[in-house]
Length: 151
Image (tube, rainbow, N blue to C red; front, side, top):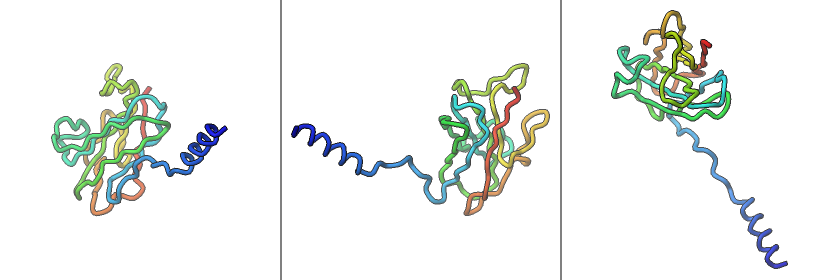
């Protein structure tokens, strides 16, 4: 009987102990939601660059801010941390199979993609200028990256 009382007391104490929530972004961090994911599989590969020559393939820019974010539903959140003022552009891939790259079929993307400012996609990715936004002391209000899928 005493053993049960101790277990019950331990469970009550455990239930009353505050549980830390997922880390919240710090004030001043550049945080962007990604919406319209067609599945909860895989990961989001994101790239934030400040030069046109590195957009949308940030492998050409050693100063690019790169993120890999696991997908956990129909949306995800990109937290780039503090970013200095300047002109930036974001390219995002929904890497559904987790192989770390954009899969294609007949030169067309098989996986999702998105760009800052919801830049239009015509016969290839948008230009840096189409996706570029100015970042000053505060992150741009209401910026959301919407995923698109060709197949």
